Image (tube, rainbow, N blue to C red; front, side, top):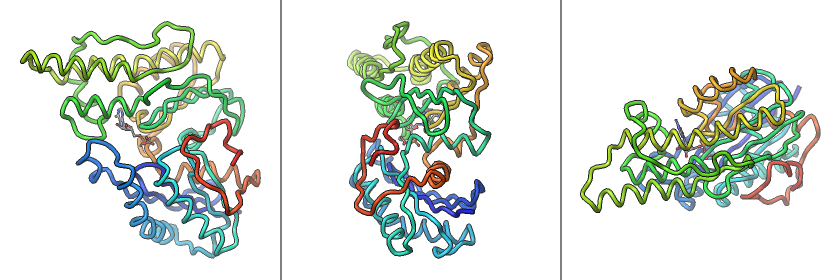
Length: 337
Ligand code: KG4
């Protein structure tokens, strides 16, 4: 029986969780969203400082909620990447210090493995599977034939889908994080604006969001210059149809080509209601099982890091104390550090 404490600090959530034999004992998250809202996006330096301020309280709360003392922890896990470099450092230094003080293993966890394995809180993974990881910093299609085996078949060639949502929201005068208001307003709008669809119908599983973002920004600026009013719900709907449509198209192609048994989703954008309903409909037509996890599983948290850490603890994937963070760590290199 192992008790693992996990820390997550890759972006704008400071989080700690404690897990014991698959059972989540605590899952504490302190979000910085309100602070970053003033800037319309995450300010990396501010994020790092806030992690440093908050991490002590978050740790204390996670231990109290779990009813566990630091002496009872068997391993300290932490997100090592990908993410914001300064933000990652706060979590890693904290985990290293604890591992050193209590003479326990240090487990470095890949953030996107976390988003994938968050699904294990809901049901066992059924292989081969397609994982759709869509967040503020990443957009990847990953094939898994077994536990901890990741083959990235497609990823964004430029911006992540969440980043695109956030930038489009900003030009429309909507608050950060932009995915939430765009998703909401889309329900009131119609698809009336013509936006170009990147990489549609092409052989690749790759995604692309920079062109779509520029397309919306230019269209809004042109209309403003001409004194025309942008219909915000219609623009949200037109944008969302294209942004989500691309992921769904590539996911369907991957499901057919790789003959997968199930599909899972992860990352903040997988909270999107249109993405969820489209995937459910299209995957059931293709006869493939799809797991749509509850929202708490999809956004950044430390429970998902703890879940991966259990697999790594079993495999004894431990890191030395001189390890550094990797803001661009590739998922298929999860055991190289
Ligand atoms: O995974 P996450 O919490 O943080 C990282 O990027 O690691 O994802 C945050 C992203 C933001 O870009 C936010 O706009 C997007 O997830 N998001 C959504 C929705 N809720 C959050 N995007 C589309 N629809 C949503 N309902």
